[in-house]
Image 1 (tube, helix red, strand yellow):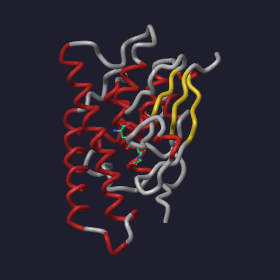
Image 2 (tube, helix red, strand yellow; image 1 turned 60 degrees about the horizontal axis):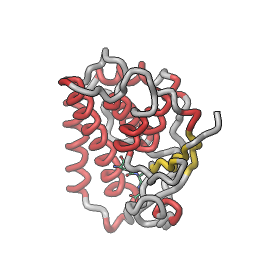
Image 3 (cartoon, protein in one colour; image 1 turned 120 degrees about the horizontal axis):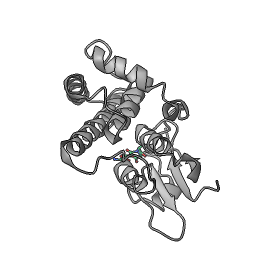
Image 4 (tube, protein in one colour; image 1 turned 60 degrees about the vertical axis):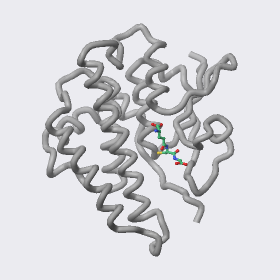
Length: 212
Ligand SMILES: N[C@@H](CCC(=O)N[C@@H](CS)C(=O)NCC(=O)O)C(=O)O
């Protein structure tokens, strides 16, 4: 199939991978050309800014002059309208609110992990603020505990579990505070989920460039 969409992507972005795993799970991956971009708030990527004023990936570029879509939540919601299979974002009922709440936790995990990395490795040493790093560590750990209790580990994949799997695997890839010891049920679920073809097709790789 000739791709009709382009995904501005990054091989080490949890958010970009979430959108691409979602596309695989929805059976749409062959309609998407994936284009790697490096992004950082300290190193402007003009091609990404041209499509998204936040300068962030992922961005979905659609054929026919339709507006580019961002962020990963919006891209997933759009992709879910393009296939005739089981909805990956449940349309109604408590399952919908559960999936969206789990997605929100996953977004927060990735955001907190990025913030933690700024305070521990990305900023110049003299600008790092340890109490802020500890504050983000607390958010990560509380979210691991929440997922250990609340994640529907036996459910079929949905936007929330896709987002959690891509966030957790990125946190582990970057060697951020671990969930393994405090959340064994979550760990077992992630190991299982990571065998899915959608996860195997989208390995994490690469370093962040902040321009220094
Ligand atoms: N809420 C956005 C977050 C996207 C995001 O933070 N992407 C990172 C890569 S992991 C980025 O491009 N950052 C560049 C920047 O902050 O300027 C989403 O879900 O897509």
